[in-house]
Image 1 (cartoon, each protein chain N blue to C red):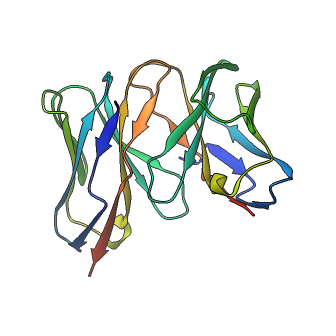
Image 2: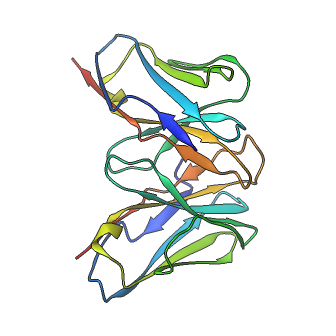
Length: 110
Length: 114
């Protein structure tokens, strides 16, 4: 079957660092995406990993281990505007098919 | 990314109504997608169109009928829906079908079926 797991909710303090984990079991793997979604808005693209290792993009970094079926999104120097849901998605199969996790709702407190 | 628009943003309909959701992308993309997002559930892929041809129908009930008249527009026609169909319906587009093609999402239509 296809399964993507991520924590339902997390809280963190402004200025801190938070790591959001994602584990996956899919029948195929062509890459892993992270999206950010503020309440009532469109999911917006954050990062893409297809090879093992860390991809850094400003305050956000994403890590992938294909052998472990594991990824994480690292957010540094947290800001209040980072309060949102973070969606992990695996590209599996043909036709650019994305399989999504249920999302992690992050609350950043002062 | 503001290149994908959806109308209406909110829709309330009865189970006997017929309505349509519209999606338009201004990014020059060739592939378009419909997703359903229910509360506390993962996004579910409904349909995929590539170059105006439907390439995937993810076991969606026939009361949902997609239409893609050209590569910039995508519709979702709704008829005799059920209350459990209430959800956020998201449209997305991508430049193609390559493994690293990023999908860009519209803001969604929040649908309530009474």
